Image (cartoon, rainbow, N blue to C red; front, top):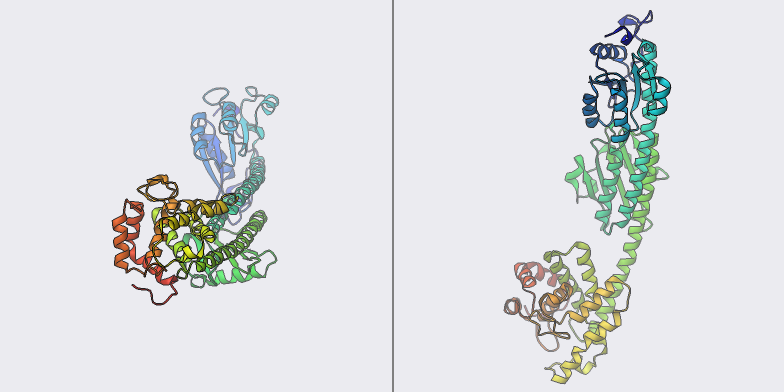
Length: 526
């Protein structure tokens, strides 16, 4: 090491027992400091001067590079370096300056604090370097006595800490905005709980200092009159779909009670985070997380903002579900009232809807689409409202003229619904029009063949005939199960979609169970 590269201690270097007492109880991830210098002595002296200190309860870990290229490798691997003590002249006269350009422009890292150190100030004049390069401090090596080194390091770490907090808050707000969009899109309570928990743990994991690096959490909501676990992470994963009462711990119960007593339903203490919310419909909801570290004030503010949005999403969901359930019940009641006019057996509409849902799920349709099909199937015979009773309730065979009149019910029902803007009503209109088409093209009204028939029409075609055969009608007695399933085997690939027939035949007991659940008429022949 040349004279110009020496770091002077003068008379202020204390004995090891007299080092400044900056040490406190260390917790949390240490600050990462990179020393870049081609002189090994500079590394050892720098390490000696600042080792053992801590700032904000966090110690220091050192990384060492002896050239610009070695520094690049470390920088690519460690994006969370807090400070770089950087020599200017190494393998070339401007190695350090080129590294600064690389850090700021190629890595786009504007958070790490760069302190430029030089033993040859003439090679990199301070005035020019400060103007042309994004550095945070410029020191001649002869300036860096022990106390000045400590001041430089602590100042850099404090600056990095504040910038990190601002960046965390920016990313936290961005996460909240994105999460809000996501949770408001959810169409089921389970998906809403999963999304809320996923976004909450993501928000906790991104916080500074490693908070939430291993988060265990759960989301619970009121289902069928009891609080059940909808989603879970970490240690609570085995409790999904189980009653909340089975998973409660003493700390969880205490956190829940504390959250319930708070104005905004949010509580955090000693590594736990809890949120309790009762929707406008009276449904209880609970989010709970156990963290590696306590939350700070900034974490509290972000989480309260996030959970306020979650509250709106839950409220919106329960209110929407209440309206939707009311609408479904009205549709079912209207459809069943219409069925009564045709002297059919009771609950035909509900059975067809449940059979259609079961077929749709086993066919591979999503939960949401199967639910829509279930509701859209209910008015499949709406057009019969315009058919005379003398034809609709005729106990014997229909004449060809009467049969032609019966076939008009698909157009009548379709025309009544097709102009509705509702996707469910639109689906119902297409079901009405196509549920009497046949796989072989011999159906009505359009003579569609195979997959020309929409999957909804094919599914309702199977569900409708299955229920019609298995229940007494004015024109026939109920068939036995053997007769029903034999008919579908015979009509596989003729009347019905072969794949749907296979699903029906492979799951006979499930379809019979639906029939049993919704059949309220005595005397059916089995």
